[in-house]
Amino acid sequence: MPPRLLLALCTLVACALAAVVGVALAARESGSRTPSEEEYVTGWAGSQRPPGIPPQDFVLRDQDGERASPADHRGGPVVVTFLYSTCEDTCPGQAQAIRGALDDLGRDVPVLAVSVDPANDTPRRARRFLVEQSMTGRMRFLLGERGELARVWKGFGIAPQTSDLEHSAYVVLLDGQGRQRIGFPADKLTSEGLVHDLRKLGA
Image 1 (cartoon, helix red, strand yellow):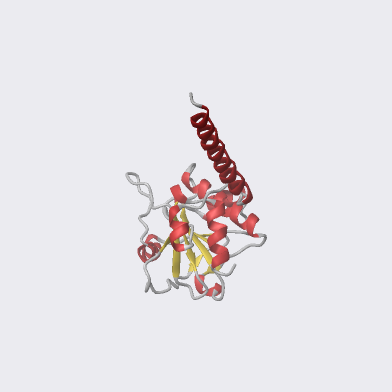
Image 2: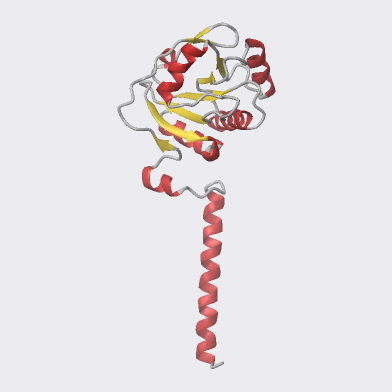
């Protein structure tokens, strides 16, 4: 191989290696997480909900029988998710992603988990779920009759759990006015993305 061609080839290889090292160092400095295409475009890790959805000011009872409503937390973001107490995969994964986000945030924000299986979600089972997920005192598990829960599901576009159909596994972030701003389907939910968007909402 002619010396001039060999020199050019070596230079090309060196530049490529430098680029790879640069990308690796940048990823390390940003927490070893490359932002998704949507984050580059919108600045949000999750998907923006359609504008104009009115606040869903429902009132339910939590696992301890205490009244709970998103309207009680105006002025700051609220995490709303949809779970059932006997779930063994998706729901624990959502709870742990939320727990990790709260840990990374350094303080708790209100978290409301709405039942999607009212026939089987009892206060005792809801409390056990929270204990198993180490979310007691950090997440409120909201229960109710099917009719009152159905109004909440409809307002958030959620399909409940049935014997034939897995429920809609979503985490939704409300802004300080109670509006639905950001949604995370379970397969896109990460603690990093969640804490990123909570901070953008003022947490």
